[in-house]
Length: 344
Image (tube, rainbow, N blue to C red; front, side, top):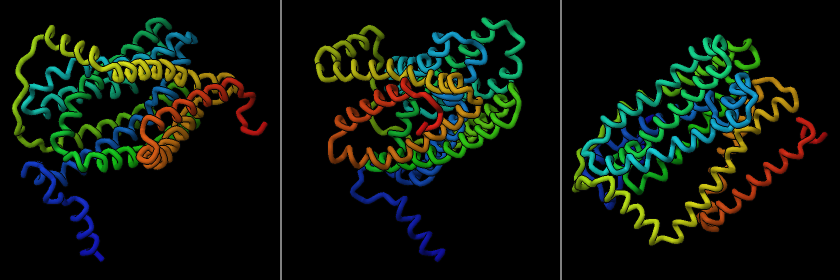
């Protein structure tokens, strides 16, 4: 039994001879696949305690009743994730090793997560305006740091995981992470319902910090092979922006896609209010935000299993259209909800 399991394990991590990759990539493939899959799983587990669409907006509603300030949480998250990547790509193209950059920026990314539990215990002593300013500053730090590390991290994954194994890698990371995240959201619900405010949120964010710390440790265990391609020459900012304008000018289909995605992210801001609305409208406890997180993560597990194969058959554009319609329908249903009970 043991030898059969080991044989299956070895076969899972073996690379067929027809896969074009360097000997160094092949030699460290098993280790890099395992530690980076664990990184993704630990990150999603930790993030389930910091959900920007449920837990953080409900916590922010303790600090302010301003819908604009609460809406800034998903807005800052999206802007911080995407805008820095546009600027980082020029630098990443010229890196011979990405691990030092990933390690540095990944460490900076995790500082606000580690600080938030202590800040939660201290922030109520501040005036309301100062409290919400400190909170939004931490959210902006989280988002901007994530956006800065995103491009070098993606380049690192491209260097250590062969193209033919990336679907398996991301599938394993996301599926495992979503399953752990459901458990994390369940724990968060117990904490938020069983401990008094603000200690409930401090404990919740502390558990999430453990997840992002384990994630960081897994990243540091990655072994990056030496780059075996020509490094892009240094390019001025003006030339780089000109190259981007050329891409946008010559790709009408790409421009349409960018407009569509921009409108989609604008619509996503509504989800930051749904948990707050439900908690306030139906007089629910803060723990309900964690329940919403668990439902979303569990739905994601089902979604990955259904939409992926369906996209292969119908086309991924069609899947995005169907998903957009469902998102719109969900907001309409929430607008007309009269009771927290589904059949009342």
